[in-house]
Image (cartoon, rainbow, N blue to C red; front, side, top):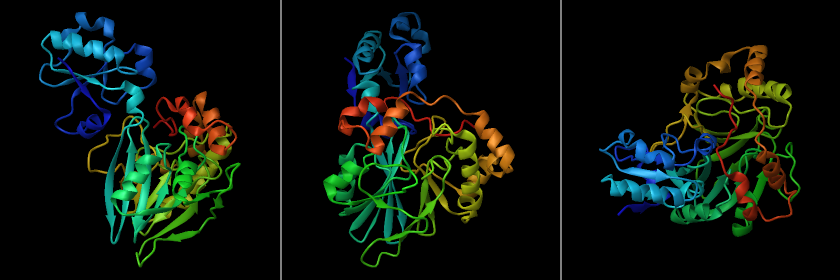
Length: 363
């Protein structure tokens, strides 16, 4: 008999010697649209003819959209003598799978929260009994639980920009905790918040020697803002990733935004020290995510990985605009919801998020 595997166990095993063989049994178009990195696509109907392609030395975890087809695949494989499991809830459940990594900064801590199915990264920055949350997803219980584990009270919530690929949990988290919501007014929001200005500083209490500072970096959106955490880390939102830069075309003004992005990177972010640890708000399908290791890179590393950072302005703009792709159709509705212009509760709009993020420039 096959077993059911929950998404939390799968997230913990990926990137380790215990990683299973992921067998996605959906149709090729479904797989192409959104899949777990490292998964292999063999549609359910093709399994009897393609058993030789399935390894015998690893557990096989079958994946589909919601867990139904994959259960049938796991049952079939088990009858063939294969050690198989079914991913409970399929890709729908994978979209809400989270894990976390802690980074120590003296008497404070950064918790990187990884939403594995979306490639979304968010952060708790805490110490002295309080925490700030940056770029929370809609599953606010995750942040409440992690804050409680550290004996932190959430007092401030930030978004680095107006998100297009996922629904923001900032308002929901503020409603649950009474925390202030901080946003850059260069993006448009139709609800109450505390405006962030370039150079603002936010201190943790009780003598914790850590300050979170705002740096306005337009480009991905007009209001994009990165947050400096002390002298050693920078939460770059969708301005700079570990393998590329943010898309500047999501507002349909690719060239204008690309020029903004060039100046934000060249004049602000790249002026930080080589040892500054870049912690973005997303990662792409080609970025390996490992247990106990944050998704991040020093600026020194990124200067080697992303040579386009050193193009002159015209070449940079040409590189970026040549790689623009059509905006995914769900992004317009997600933006409207995050602006506060959709009367429906955000929780009822979850279906808009299904699929990967596409917020970086293809390198």
